[in-house]
Length: 308
Image (cartoon, rainbow, N blue to C red):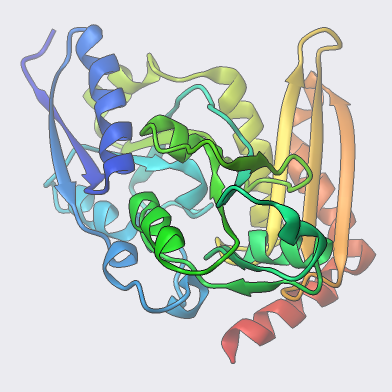
């Protein structure tokens, strides 16, 4: 095996470093030499604006994309839900690791009576906000930004009733508290719970190494969800949720997708089950159905609101 050291680029938050170390260990176990290089992204630095106001998708991935293109790192590890559906020219998806918990959870302060009355819930995600308002229209939702540690600290410091997190992120760094509720009614972000590793298209050494880490079932399911997102033209900001699961017994893929208005009042949902042989077009076809049933107008309205 070549003596080349694979330089792994990552954000410098605890969760991002956990993800990078996970990939590093798997590569080391295969006999590859690695080095971790951490960088700060704009999404981590600008914490006083909601993500959608920053006006670009890929705010958490851009800095690492530039580091790869400039040759400072060879590969980059991301939470797949943060990655834009169109990668920069020259960068390719090299491996999708086996998916963890897909659920969103509500972290609360020990009392959930507020679910029956008024409440203030924190989240920086339009998808979570819209689905929360769809179910609890009289609750107040406030913006919550920062890495998971920062967000957990802000929840403790404020008089909010609860905040919504991805279960996988909290579980990975042992931050999941006792006081939480699984939001199994909330459709997760496309590719939630999955990690992706990207590399330069011409870097055959890194691509070959990473191909050995790829989990095919997760790759297929996340492809479907991201294709649904891409076809709706959601970027990473519109209130879009999608989840697909493989049913081994039936050899089918089950898919659920949702598009909501920002205020949560409108909700367009789709559920489909197809034979595994039809997976490649599933996300596209599901999105087309949503678009044909009012989604085109709703997406136009969302874009108009986000430009204000």
